[in-house]
Image (tube, rainbow, N blue to C red):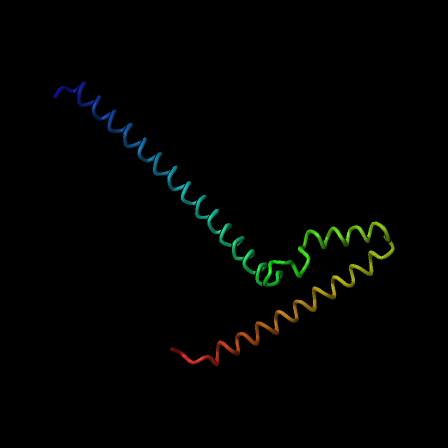
Length: 120
């Protein structure tokens, strides 16, 4: 094999190696993106399951208003009666606080049940 052929062969191998390395980088980026998208979709699915469980009855009729509709309703009322803004904010803050307290209590009860559950 001559020196020119050797150089040509080395150059071809170098290009092939660089191409493979680039392909690996692209594949890794795609895997990262797909992993992130899968996590997002999984979270959305879990949220939909929870919403279906707690916001709909057994016939599929919504029993609790969805957040978007509820916020539009509140905004409409506030637009009609702007002097009620502070009262609405106070009620929303109070509701947030009570939901936080209720959640903490339920988490405490769940933890107590999990601690008393016999090991299998």
